[in-house]
Length: 376
Image (cartoon, rainbow, N blue to C red):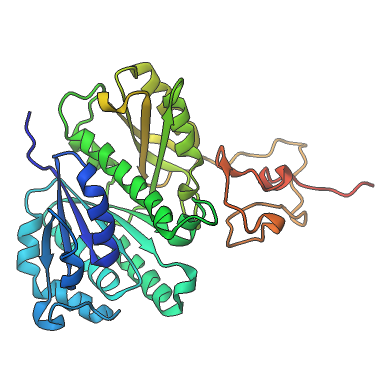
């Protein structure tokens, strides 16, 4: 069996290098790992990873001090080396934290180099906590816009949402471990496409059709199930993941890739039932690719990863039947959008709990947009 790497996983900057170095030991051989930063102290803490220290004449081996121009200049200074790094890979996965100088200044130009090399580029970017200050938030927002047009797929991880995944008294490292598992799950799923012997194989070329062109809105989710009905549990967990329902997230896409990975007891029927649940939730009317892989070491555990892009084809407007009453434009409609757009009342300090894509702490009449009329 060939173990030649087909996927290049790149950690950029302090946050990106930290996240990638933590998940790298758990990835299959088809994934090559590279860590890129200006800061020698960051790169020296990694063990057994391939590192690229860039911009040495500019920073003298130190960080960028939060300056975007320095991060950009560092990538440009070592562009020939970085171009050689990206040559020959079908898929490049870029992981970075935005808000600082290296990630915000270097992510978009680095993704551009990968695009020029002919790779499909999938980027994961974390957004600073709200308490980190307006400057970092602004730099992250501006960098996100630039990175989006240089990536076939862009998955945004809100640090504020990460904090909601764990108990209030949990450590900060526990919160970040949620993101580690989320991204690691996606990489294991993508790696399965390039690994021979899948229960339901996927042509890597077909996977590229999901991420058609740079700048497409991107959906990603991940769920795990164990025991009886593990595949269905994992699929429902992927549908309900609050990380897939954060501010600005899209929940309906035209094209879907669903990878189901489980132990020896998982059947093709389990995988088909899981993808059916995913399609009901996220769409995939244009294209749906199902991949299924058996890994004996998982036992009774099943992992479901979902990657989607491109907006769904709009449905034609329905005509009002003759004699039917139209809606009153003056009648208010109550819709629960995101935690940022409305107050959650007494639940404002509790974690978001989603079921079938809805926050169950929000009253039913709000979640289902029921029109309330006064009694006459």
